[in-house]
Amino acid sequence: MTNLSREKIENLKSKVKGQIVLPSDSSYNEVRQIWNAMIERRPALIVRCAEADDVPPAIAFARENGLEISIRGAGHNIAGNAVCDNGVMIDFSTMRLVRVDAEKKRAYVEPGATLADFDEAAQSHGLATPVGINSTTGIAGLTLGGGFGWLTRKYGMTIDNLLSVDAVTADGERIRASENENADLFWAIRGGGGNFAVVTRFEFKLHEVGPEILAGLIVFPIRPGKTGTDPVSRICKIRTRGAQRVGYHAQGSPFTISSRRCAWQGGSCACDLLHWGCCAGQKTD
Ligand SMILES: Cc1cc2nc3c(=O)[nH]c(=O)nc-3n(C[C@H](O)[C@H](O)[C@H](O)COP(=O)(O)OP(=O)(O)OC[C@H]3O[C@@H](n4cnc5c(N)ncnc54)[C@H](O)[C@@H]3O)c2cc1C
Image (cartoon, rainbow, N blue to C red; front, side, top):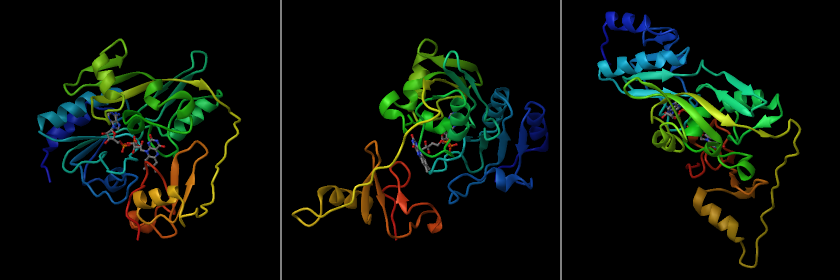
């Protein structure tokens, strides 16, 4: 474990408004926890940001001490990239504010917001933009990876609706990126998967959707054709190793239903229904 002097830590504390969490703190295990409970990593220090101004000192601290940085939005990424071993975790889980300008049809979103935070704020004005399917997912990681969801077929991917970001670069500079400002960085941010600077605010375009909508799921039964099994079923069986039945979302993306428990997360996840983008292709037992 990295040894950080008390003096260095006190110095960092004096520069940030948020909380510094250390392995010796009682809240440490709870704060480093992410959605995928199989991830077991121990950062040397966690900066729980209270505002964007907390990010430059956190980056400077990591650089001065030669520490790796990980960034946590809502902590939903399966690979657990939000948490690092022996490094500095920049944690946005307490920065979840979503401000909506209904007249301009714009949303300004802090990087710890979940899809639920976003949808709730936007839907109170009958507005929405394409984000993901699962409400506990983070806006930050989802957007930085491209983002697709229920509204994608009508309004494009999440990044098609991203207008600008406020961000902090690796040398601690606070910048804005959009089509017109730092356009090269804006290109990388839209789908690069994260860590092209630390994003501290997202600006989205909104569309008139709802608040009342008609939605539903269409599931077709699998009927064996002349060959005994139908082609869709055969393809999906190969791709998902062990799927028993196959269905389609109303909008066309395939999902599979396994009659066996999924080994992922100790068999505790909701993988009776295996999802594309979630755990399709994971081994079932
Ligand atoms: C059950 C489930 C359902 C999903 N459904 C969908 C879906 O419908 N559509 C879809 O598009 N995706 C979906 N995903 C994928 C999801 O979008 C990604 O896992 C995404 O990374 C989660 O975002 P997060 O902020 O919660 O992640 P985190 O784990 O917090 O962050 C993931 C990574 O993003 C980067 N990052 C996060 N915040 C920042 C920041 N502020 N600045 C710079 N980099 C940052 C970091 O590299 C970080 O390690 C789903 C995932 C799961 C597990």
